[in-house]
Length: 93
Image (cartoon, rainbow, N blue to C red; front, side, top):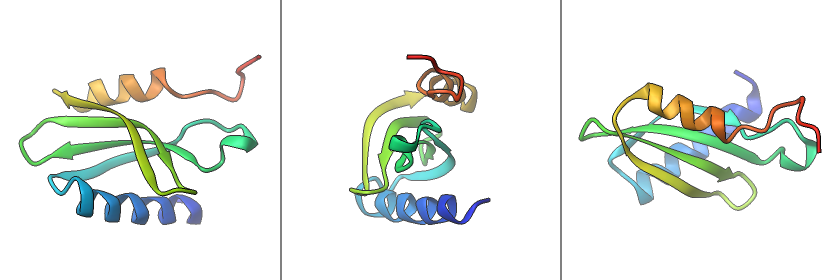
């Protein structure tokens, strides 16, 4: 795992511990590979009640977690949302 992603994982874990203590990080992905988005990530986590959540925007600059999708029933549901909100390298504007 790249160093920057490890730093993001540490910050997200601390954030969840303080603000959403029932959640454990499952996966973190870059939101896009556009240079202007280098500080944006998508996060999935599992809650201690067995449900899952995805936040489609972790901002590493402000260390904030936004746009949550809660009460998901599976990791597959998380992955689907993460894929829907990912802006790929081949995105043409």
